[in-house]
Image (cartoon, rainbow, N blue to C red; front, side, top):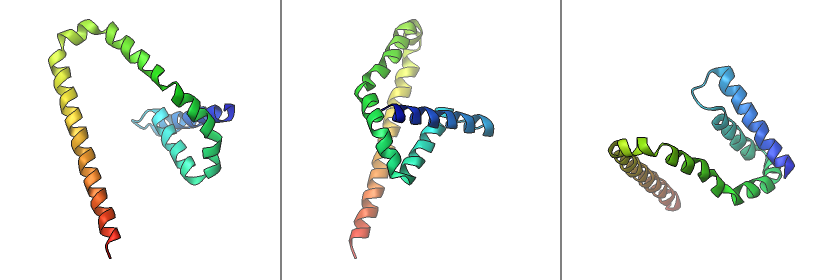
Length: 118
């Protein structure tokens, strides 16, 4: 598990370095995650190294919601003041996300269906 966690941190560090060196508008951890994904695709042994750490992190995933809940309580007066724009943006972004997901799913299903028929 230590190897897996170390690997995660190394990929995050590499992503931070790439993001800063190239002046990318993308956060370093996101670049690191993409590099990790690429590494997992290219090397199956990397997947075995990360598996224990990934399972341990996944079992404690709910802890990531604590900072968000704290932020909501901390900025509650601001949320009360601006509730309408927040509500509208949440509803619109949810609908857009659902529409894009449905469109991509339909396109992929049509592609798979057309490949199955001779």
